[in-house]
Image 1: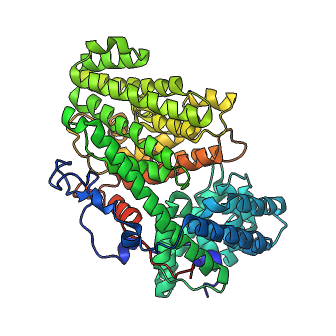
Image 2: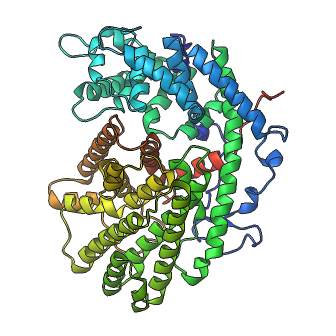
Image 3: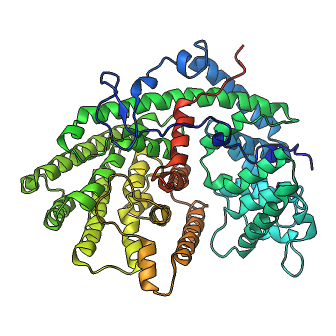
Length: 583
């Protein structure tokens, strides 16, 4: 079957790891340009100097110096007109929205995308509408509408099932449709059995038929199965699209691809500058000398920010977010490895009161930590107030208090030997994951939809946060290796589940965890649908954080994170060639 439709062409990018040369492990620690490369980063992996980030754009990012912001903005404006005009056609409109999303440039076209999807939502019906018997078209429309918060019923796919409830012959013969069906299954919410069945059905047939496809078609199918778009990081997938030389009958596909390449390089340059600021902040803080156990990993902290907040305009927010992320790691290490139970109890009490006057009661390393925590919280609160007119200091302090209290619960479990039941562990682990602290900061840094309702919700660990945290906690526990520098005691849902179920083996316990992760995704999907009190930017950040989790916690046999290393290399170091669309 020819792959000529844009949705089929863009359905799956190539993975860079299959075409790039092997790379050496990438260090999370970076050496400022005024230090020697032999400075003291984390000892596990070699370092790469920050001077790579300071290279002039013409030397590093691969685009010419005559490309300036004004010229680029003009091109974006012109492409907005293309999207608006071509998007009036229902089929082309869907294809274009899919394309700009997969190319990672959709943040430029949010108004135009909403106009197209509003028209699509108005004509959406399980029984009527354009191409309602075309599985590929129906699946794409369903995916795009759900991705943007529109609730559309999953029973649209009943049109492709027989009276006995099984998917019909026509659906089973449509490779593009099967890929679309598989993509749609990842947007399911609880109770949508048709999408659960669609996922099983499409996986089974695609896996069977990939052996009989030509190399190009097989590659597309394999990448669809490995990286469903809804659960993948769009910018990394976009980078891989640039590498593949996919054909297209639509001239606008190549036009948008060229724009995306320029955008990728420009945004990469911006991220490099933000990384320099993060590293400089860490250097000026001086904690690497004051607290020898503090992880020297500014890149790792910044990667969470870069991945969560993808809009290029959110530059200062990304830099600020990296700071509390560092503190999550630091305080986690204090509780897991360095503090005695008495010290940890006192530390938690002082954090809950946010009592600077009591700081002298703490040991020196805790005094240093609390002082940095207070300074960072105050500085971020001031910047948020200046930008958005609201001071979030009490909400931020409350989030930190909740995190420390959850850490203390775990410390008491391990100290006493009175270990929890699996579900008790998970309930506490959702807080101790640190996701609540991160997303509370993101909420205020974005400064959108700060209503009475959302301000009350954000202090109560709302479901959109707890479901994201569940995904992280369970993925972390599913990991095959300890995090680096972790010599203290740590719990695991799998361990407690097997303890609760003595007849259960490790494989069964792991399957249970995978099912719970799937259930958490369904809950998160539902929370992202309208009506949703939070902004689309906040829901997008929550989704991006969940998408980042597998990269952060998928260890190999050498206790390394190869997927994360490839992600860093691809997005921060490798530019993409352009065709000179400004010539």
